[in-house]
Amino acid sequence: MPATKEGRVTKSKRAQRSSGSPARRVSSVAKSLPLVERTNALAIGDFISQYVPSLDVMRLQGKGADHAESTADKDSRERENNIQLDVYSTATLSGEDLEACLDLVELTSREDYSTSSAGWSRSKKRKEMKLPEMKYLILRNTTEKAELSGQRQCEPPGENKLENEEDTKSKILGFLSCMVTYEDGREVMYCYEIHLSHEARGRGLGGMLMIQMEEIGRRIGLEKCMLTVFRSNTRAREFYEKGGYQVDEYSPQPRRLRNGTIKEADYLILSKRLLP
Image (cartoon, rainbow, N blue to C red; front, side, top):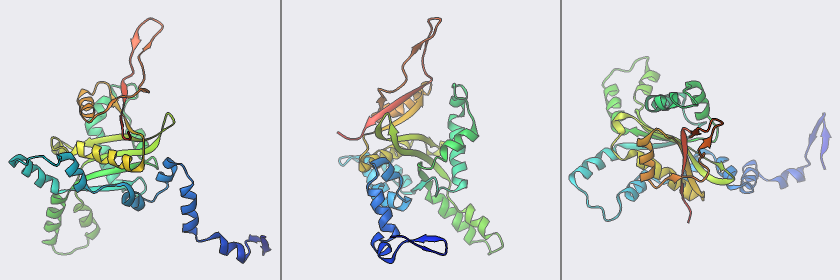
């Protein structure tokens, strides 16, 4: 029974002992949550250890066991071996990396947004990218990081230590952002963004990011992956269709205006099933 002490209500010692440790209580509460909420409640370290496969596993899945390696494949593999995949939550993503990802969105998609009904707004896109449940898969070039680090080692130590540490941070080659969420009552992995720098294109990295996201969703136990694509972006649509995505049943349908004109939405919702 609670006792009053100096104006405060405190639990009896027996009640305190029976309540267990805070970590145990949090774990018990998390287990009682639905799948989406339980997954989003995980700290990023736990999310990675439970659901994120290693990049090497993804490379093997992409190649196939019987794939015969050519000279071009060997060159591609060497480039891939210099790529690092980092996984972040919104809370652990640095402001610098967020702005770098936002720069990529603007570089690759501003024109599509500008001609759409939504229009382009960097501030609105930044707000969306900072949604708390968002996860980021970021590709970096480790060779570039090593080269920059080597250059700095040749310089005498000075007062710009923090600046030097920022300079040696490798450039973002591309990223994918996604969220475990509900869509029309179903538990899904929703891909919000996937963008590559010019130097990263044509190397299979976009497909690698998609496979990584899908495998995470599969390990969590989600029904499908979903995404939105501009109808006018034929290149992106072909990329997704090649990866097995189809127009989802909840994609907006054409509608007839009062004057009889048929108007189509400027975007499509695509999806791919993850579970049998």
